Image (cartoon, rainbow, N blue to C red; front, side, top):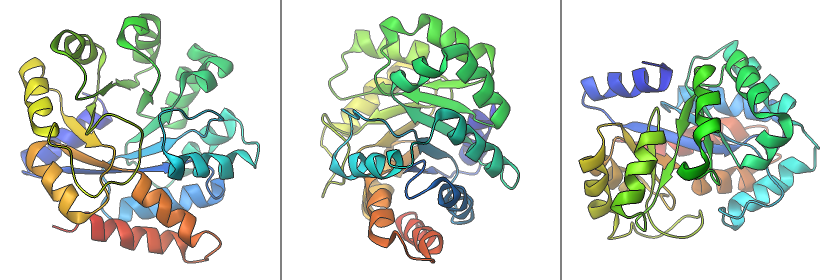
Length: 262
């Protein structure tokens, strides 16, 4: 069992659920990203998703789109993001997931990316526009280098497609709480529970739920159903709000402690 699975198994043994924050790497800059990840771990995060900024983030809402725009201003390359992971690894063993579109991976070279990401200390990769039907070479490549391949499932995924998704997934399954793009919502979708029930009939792999989770009550509601809660836009919005503040990292840490308060 790899690092992500080990972390989730230990939580399950203790009767606990995972808090999984998402931040965009390079927003507001990579030095701050390193500090943010270390603060997120201190704040009780169990796995951290690092979004790779992309010029056409079609699955993302305006909050994360703006964070990508802020990061892209620096003209960082994939190698810079992997160097940031290496810097994180000097101080932290928190499992890290690269959250990307396929284009940046293809431009870097898929095998080279898998090799270099694993060497830097990445534990898993989630490619938002990678479908299970096209994932054979991708999955085999990541597996050769010890990286978990995390796939998205949605309420619109029928049973046949769920079977394909779970067969490709390693580490945990990311269940999108509703159809549409990322972004904070006032309430969770009524489709979440029945979708999760269908997933549970297909696999015993841990399931984390994301998209639209923005309050402690929503985190708690997800924890009652799933193995982990992913919070992205709400955290990224706080980074946007406090950018330029020398206390940015500590404020994000406090926000995450509030979100995950039990």
